[in-house]
Length: 377
Image (cartoon, rainbow, N blue to C red; front, side):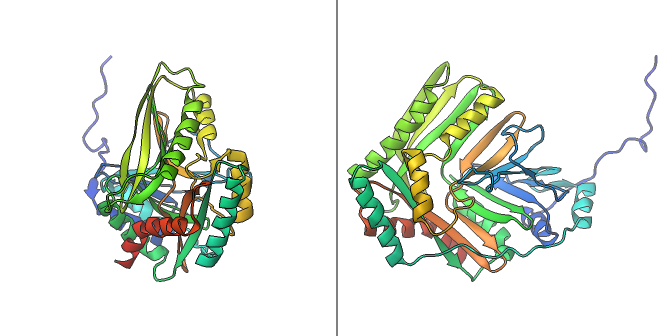
């Protein structure tokens, strides 16, 4: 049997065109579409995923059958769902098919106002919180707890999101830079230095990250900072050694520069393939890590809820691209929530029995500069 000849007029070849990624993202915000965009660490490639329907999947499996982006909150409770933005339109470095562009231009969803309801506390109140936690830790009630705070800025809003995202991609080459928008629910931007988990083929990667000092002022790591990093490493290793990996390679601790700060970091590379259920279980055990929560984890979570006046929301949660072939998930740090009335930055630091309240406040100020200097410009 001969294959029927198809004339050139019958073959539909998509017409591709180039657009600046900022144009595409601005169009998504203008039309109130669900979308995500990111740039992986040490890469120049900008990825964009756009969902063309309003219904956002909640509490998805970690490896769904579609390509997209998962966002999970700090508190993984029933009233704090995770979300999956599906990439109905997938764009790499601004190359887009004309029919896809036409879909974006012709799709527009009703806008719901995103209000800023996060509580910001004064330095005085923060010092009281930190001192109270240090006292509890000195009484050996916990080993470590992470205290965070929120910082408001009304000079920029969701309308400035694309330009902030662009500036972050240009400034923080070693960070995972991302922006996502769920209409009426959330819009966030971040430049995270911390990998939660990467899973591709038969390789799993993760890290322990803790301790902070100025990147531009050479100084030795203190005993408190080394102890804090070791706590996180011990926690990660205990979880990894429960799994039947063929081998686990450990590198570190070593310095990791993230903008104007430097952290202590240990990398783990594990050989062995996990099933979807095993991968989900591993992520649930790792999240939230002691780097953003504390030890013991359950007690730290309770203490955080009782101490902090704000809801962390997606701060210190995790996010990243997922597909049937794997995932790249990062802890949502150095991040900000975008609203119609301004933005809210989130910063935190690990507190141990050796901590000093004033030093912890200064550490949060140092971390905040990562985003504040972008906003000021």
